[in-house]
Image (cartoon, rainbow, N blue to C red; front, side, top):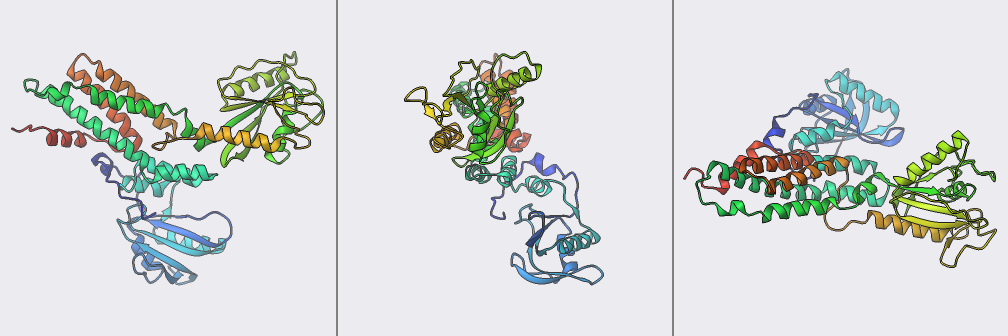
Amino acid sequence: MDQIADRSASPEVRRRAPASAGTIFALASGAGRAAVAVMRLSGPDTGEILASLCRPPPPRRASLRGLRAPDGEMLDRALVLWLPAPASYTGEDCAELFLHGGHAVIDAVSEALVALGARPAEAGEFTRRAFLNGRMDLLEAEAVADLVEAETGAQRRQALRQLEGELGALYRDWADRLRRLLANAEAAIDFSDQDLPEIADDAPLEGLRTAIAAHLADDHRGERLRDGLTIVVAGPPNAGKSSLINALSGREVAIVSPAPGTTRDTLETRVVLGGLPVTLIDTAGLRESTDPVEAEGVRRARTRAAGADLVLILVDCTAPVPFALDTAAPVLAVANKTDLAPPPGPDCLAVSALTGAGLPELRTRLAGLVETLTRASGPPPLTRARHRAALCVAEAALAAARTAPAAELRAEELRLALAAIGRITGSVSVEDILDTIFSSFCIGK
């Protein structure tokens, strides 16, 4: 990760210190026995600790070394990388030990590191130090977590775009534009007797507000891709919803019975459709019932359908039952049990969950709908609710700034908008405003 471009942290950020200082270490490879395990170190004492373990290798050159405990016992023969600051993942002195992957080796090296003054890292502490040392902004730090959690190629590509700084560059550009607007507003207050006609121009402010609004109007595509889409399978009792869930997931997820009303609660399973993560939800059959348990299941089914990304309505070819469903999500109607009766119409997507007839066509249709729901063009889409909330604050503040009755109120709304965008990337400070003011106007003249 040394190739990540250095992001100069704001003065505010540079003054902050990690919650827990010192030199940290952690296993960077997966848990369990393996051929190779990677142990990562970071902190001010990394070089000294490395020198105690072995003969220090040249910087940035993998070297085979024997690792010894403080008492001289041989621990392992490993490849060692020494990565002095600041060109490291965290911006601190770092080292990586490529050990043999047995538990005994890992435990022995961990004990030796503790004896030499290092401590186990907290969750996310390496990336947190990278942010605090200006190696990445908050968006890139979040992208690291998304990349680790990625289940599909589409999720990986979205996380990489964010990690490479595309989203951060967009927000930094907006922050720069906001700083210029705020500098103008501050100048209008401090130099009201001067002739500064460009300050009253609302076009840049409205252009920025429009850009943010367009970015927000993405139908939550990035969040859907990051978290995975939800497809609810709904329909009347005994339409074959559980059988279809089992067929689409390729395993026995739900109990199947010819008796109607078997499913009383929602049941979830994770699948991949068209290279995208999807959660399929089996629901109780939709009908009026005096049974309190079944009635609760029906209520939950309707609730999940109302909040789904896509609803697959399944009907029985042998006995179509009309029912009402309140949902704003796209709906795909499918007829099941074509092994027992013909589909209700020539244009109906028909399947047999029992024989598998029509399932390839259904998977293709679902994959196309899922791809449409997550397709994004232009800059990387929003990926987290935190980003969306901050941008909503920024857009509202810009709208208020345009109609503000006084220059002081306009400046305050612009400050709120700038602070909101700064919270996304983690870099905004008073010094940035002052720099823009002094470079844009001849204040001392």
